[in-house]
Image (cartoon, rainbow, N blue to C red; front, side, top):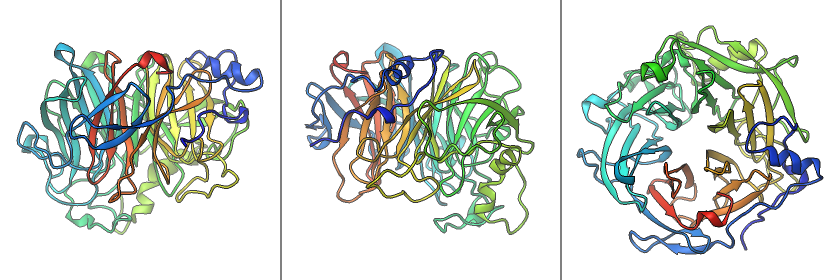
Length: 473
């Protein structure tokens, strides 16, 4: 049997009739004593991949998919597709195609996979690939668009036609080795930055240093304030929610300029509010922002990786910034930035606390960029309902798509405006890679195709299509 589709009333949390977002329905449902039943798509059934006939996904009746661009495949520029497909965005291409910019979350030292003009650090393995694909997963062109970066986890699509890719690390020759034990003395450059990857020209391979050096995860742009919101996934330590205020509007300059101001969210009148803990129903906080004085710190010889990875966040917390657990995906929609705390919340009865900082199975937060109000939309009541959400995107109807990174079977789930969760896809387990997960979900600009990655040592991308009108997406 598939896991439960709907939540108890205590699990759907939103507050205030002034919630100017697609999730007004969630607040109304809670006020009436419980969430309304969301529109799912029905039972999940095994479906064969149209590329090779293998069963990789379980989907509702009527849905199909095709995989493409697997690890080791050849790109059009002669490069090889790297592993660990992660965050991704879809931009409008010619003749109904989508231009996909995709991260590859690779750690450690080695030879950069892309051509020389795409390389930041020649001794690292990560980066991005750009793929032009049809809505049925047929690849028309592909290339390396940024290489020589490290641990490119997620990022964000920018309305001026760029992808911001984020490094989830602070490795570099100036700090000690991280938990993998890789030799940082082999690296040529410092890491832990955000890079811009344009669609129409090669990436500059220059980091936006003023946007901070920390364990970046994802980014979202607010057109009303010009801020780029950023999530931090600091696995073993507290994480923060940031915004970068560029010196000029990137929609005017056509790119995100360095030299701006980095800030970190704090709760008004509550110093170091610990939002990683289980929250009360209807949780709502007035937000304020504290400046980060040194977003790109210099480290003295002998600085450990654990010390370096907390250096930027510690500056904010010294000024009262809020504490979160592992902030991963974020997306902007209609004046609100939705972001995911993967291990936020309390440990449910019958569950075990996951490793790392945070004891819960996931929270979904919403920051109203105009009102300056932070609301908790959803907190998982246990792993059977939602298990460690990660990347997130939003459909045209305003339903969130959550990529799960759980301990057992992994799902793509929808969080509806009515405050309920439904299962949309389940990954067929990979015998040789039990840690495989969904990542990088993104709808094509016309809304007809959901692209998503399976992050694995044998990872690949998928195009999913079908009768979207029947359910919540």
